[in-house]
Amino acid sequence: MPPVPSHPATPGRPTAATRRRAAGAPRKGEQTRAAIVEAALELAARDGLEGLTIGALAERMRMSKSGVFAHFGSREDLQIAVLKAYERRFVDEVLVPALKERRGLPRLRAIFERWIELAAIEAARGCIWISGATEYDDRPGAVREELVAMVRSWQRELARAIQQAVETGDLPADLDAQDLLFQLYGVILVLHHDGRLLNSPDAVARARRSFDRLIDSWQRAARPVRAQKRTNVRSVKAAR
Image (cartoon, helix red, strand yellow):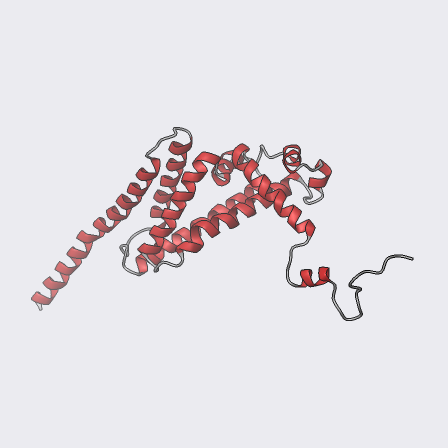
C-alpha cells in the first residue's frame, strides 16, 4: 500500500504548488531562463554579443548545450533576450531614479549623472550597447534592429528631458534638443573610450565638467538674445 501523504489534497483545497503559482511565484523554468540571461549578460559585456556562445554559456551554467537551447529557440533569440534584459536594467538604474527630480534641468542633470556613473562602471566591464554598435553597425538582422530600436528609444527619453528643461525655462527656447542630445551622447562615448581603452583616471570628472560647460554655453548664448528683445521692446514703447 502506498504511503499516505501527511497533508492530502482535498477537493476545493489548493495544493502548496498551486498557491505559489497563484501568488506569482516564478516557475522553475522561468527561474532557470532568468539565470541563463543573467550569466549571458556578464559574458556579453566581456566578450560582446557576437562572442556569446551557447558552449561558453552552458559551461558557465554547468548545463548541457541542449539544456540551454531548450530555453531559447536560437542563438539570435538569446542575444535579443540579453539586449532586453540590459535595457530594463539601464532604465531602472538611470532613468527611473531621475524621474523623482523636478522637470527641467534638475531632472536632466540627474539623468546624465546616473548615466555617467553607469558608464564609469561599464568602462571596466564593458557596455553591451556600445560594443554592440561596433559589432552590428553594418550587420543586418534582428539583433541589429533590436539594438537600434533600443538606442533610439533611449535618445527619445533624453530628448524629452531636454525639451522639458526648455519648457520650464531652464534652457533657452531656441535650443535644438537634438543638438544637445548629440553633444551629451558624445560625452558618454568619449568617457567610455578614455575610461576603457586609455584607462584615464580623470575621465569621469571631465565628463561632468563637459556637461556643465555645455549647459552653460547654451544658457549664455540665449542671454544676448533675451537682452536684445528687452531693448527692442523698450524702444518700441519709447517711440509710442
